[in-house]
Length: 224
Length: 346
Image 1: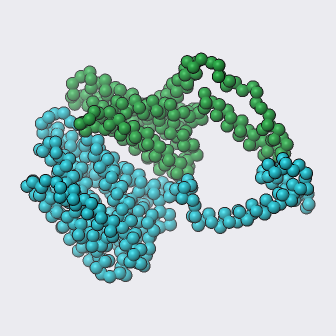
Image 2 (image 1 turned 90 degrees about the vertical axis):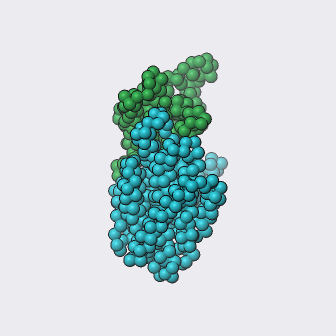
């Protein structure tokens, strides 16, 4: 909801910013700015908390749906970003892959740091190469695209609980994880590839590929 | 003509001096104000244009870091390829890095190398355990990744710093900037990415052959780029620097092989205390040729080596370990000797 308000405000602000250019007269701009906007539709102070939470959950769910069926034209994931989905999925994967003391696997913090700050570094790389996308938009896309690897992690965990360790099981796990990896890479590229100048597309895509590859490797080697 | 001037003024007022205008109201007064502000702005912009093209950007601004990522795909590919192919009379830094040293290549090469080492080290271990089937249950060791990260990042940042201060201290003919040296060192690690994947092969001879080839390829690219810088100096320092560069490169490769790929062999035999054991062996391998390196390189490296020494000493040196350490020492010595001979030829 706050985000909606912020987006509305920003849009209104942008309109105001463009006014001087359009009219070329100061009087118009000043009067527009001082005039309070009374017909805004986000006055939701008196609604129940549950309604608010449900609406936010719906937005997050819709974004996860977008990731599962990515289309080049659908860019609404980029326009209204949020970090709830990335937070959920990061914590979820870290909990799944966490291994207790004395084992050789990663701890919760290690997985979480690697996924979250890995996404931050990949985003920073996109920005430094001159990408035309905001920091949080890219972070949001990378986080939401962790859904297929997350699903693969659940499947691997279930499979290991269900049956004995065997080479057939390993092959199945390998297949599931690689499907998740390809899916995540493809989805994130559908959203992010347009933001780069064509001469640098490969430079921006390689870190994304590496990021999902490393996460998939962690999933396949530590989800048992 | 006067009309035209008035128009432009009016625009300036609209964009720049709004708050003042609200208070004043009158048009003539406004003109004076905006005129002054225009002049000030003009001066400001002049100062601005003087400073920006020379790269005098604020250290905390985003643009400052953006200039190190100002590369295109084919440029990076060219640098990657040229960092692996040594050619006589070709200076990698002057011909490929020089106008704009980038940090994109070095950073992502290091990250790639960290993960290929971590993943392939585990893979090598997995193949070994599957062969012997002692415990049947394989557990991959995540902490290889953190170890590889600290080793690689300290190599890529500290060694160029040492070389930079050496060149600066000796007032050599060619002064490379720190970033240029850092960039060259980052790109010189490219060759180890495919090598670390090929190290999965469980043949000692193949692994050693790969080390020799890789170190020669990228090591000589580095040596050829630093030779013009140290050529004018005393013979001892000039050759010492080149041998130091090659030697440190060889130590990195051998340390990788011993620590990340051969340590798996030990862990099967010795069980729990394998981590201490192999790190001790690595420290020994690092400190053994230290006198050679310390001779030429500055304090930071020798300090490094000293820091590692007590750790190695505190480790209980049983028979196996000492024999392993000497086994490490011998190839290092031969590699250095080879490097010296080749450097002498140059």
